[in-house]
Image (cartoon, rainbow, N blue to C red; front, side, top):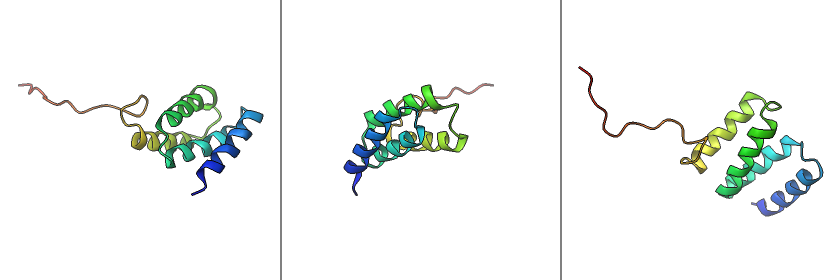
Length: 90
């Protein structure tokens, strides 16, 4: 439960080395655990825009899985939706 301290330390690391996507991945986990949805989504967007090519597929899939829980209505986490009144085709 020392998330505020972890958040501050990681923010300092990122400010010093903005290309450090590993620190950003740790910070996004802190945002997830503390339910900071807006911060989570902003950082997820940054990771996708600036670091997706650097990240392993599993790292990005983990961000998406967390996003589907913390922000299920936001892109890119919303995904396809079921049709509420499907029509039958004869």
